[in-house]
Amino acid sequence: MKALVWIVSLGLISCTAPKENEAALLQKQGIQKISIGDVRLASRLMSRDEPEQGGGYVYFNVKIEKTDTDRIGKEQALYLAFDIQQDFVLKAGGRQILPGVCQKIENGRKDIYEYVVAFEAGKELEKEELTLLYKDKIFGVGTVAFVYDQADLKNFEPKS
Image 1 (tube, rainbow, N blue to C red):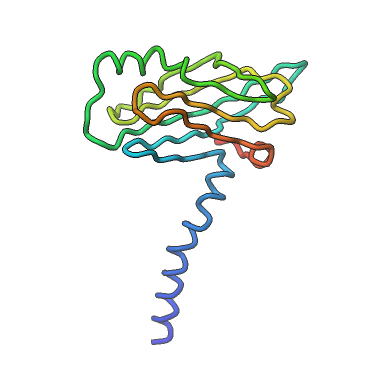
Image 2 (image 1 turned 45 degrees about the vertical axis):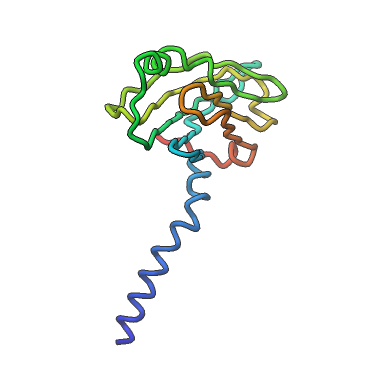
């Protein structure tokens, strides 16, 4: 009987432990998640190059998931496929940087829109926090900010 109580207790503890550590684990992986109404947004810091002679790049994976069943119109779908690049801005060191690359990732899902967004950001990568801004024009969520401070950048473990 004691063994059964111990096993059940251990099971309950293990079920609650990941939730407590989920934010820390996500932060360690460079992931931030936000839910606004029927839309879930996630930003993952994929990698960052060390600045070399004033250069340096930072790459993000951005997912936008629409959880309701309303379909996106044809014009909106074209915007999401070809013109969404202008909706992303990286704030670093007092500057606003437009993306050099914004590539849609075809994932086979009609409700998840996924992108790789790359920014050229010089020495700002070394000392300032980075804020990825998404200025939504399609889903009705307004402007969303994903803030990565220097602790996030130093603890970041890129996924292989």
